[in-house]
Length: 272
Ligand code: HPA
View: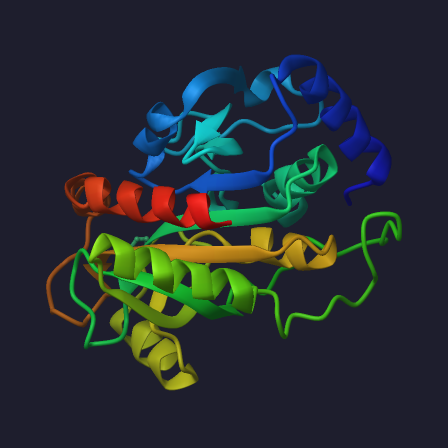
């Protein structure tokens, strides 16, 4: 359970360390961390130094906050996120979202690497997350609710803020990058899905699958922080191409498509 008291302690520590109050929170997914190096006048704070923060262990997740300016906006960036498959609980994973809100962020930009379920997608494509299906069976809001953070039963209808989605389309058009829109299916992992699971998710209406994002979005809805999610399709999901999946492939594609991804996110951030 996350409490307002914890969140304020984390925020007080960061307020003393950061050069400014951030306007936008940015979470960088697998292989997407290098965007943090494009922040100007960056200040780095390891998660381990921040009261109540947990430290990411996933490969290529640096595990630190990077605060700086991107496209003229004051950004607080998570270079590396926490995942359920590392053993973190949903509320631990979602915790930084509340801290970003407490620091003054008015929008949260989430990115991730996903497997493509929609057969009209191709490896290297980008998908704006229009909605999600939480297949983890868990919620970061399980347990007592601190009403100072948000309501017991938050609405998820507009969790993915329509106004931010408009800005993402404008950014994509400006960058000459195609942006699909679809439903993200969040799973625990770390194993990739079976082909049968992917067929089920497709029947459910999912277009992409990944091991992150849904808990952060639930927390953002809980604390009324407008959120947008953009997925990079790093592989076609299990069974789509009848070839084995590998984490190395995911990272390789994330790196190869990284420059376009960074342009897209930078352009989006400049519009928020
Ligand atoms: N499944 C789950 N998570 C992922 C995938 C996938 O195919 N690709 C990248 N993250």
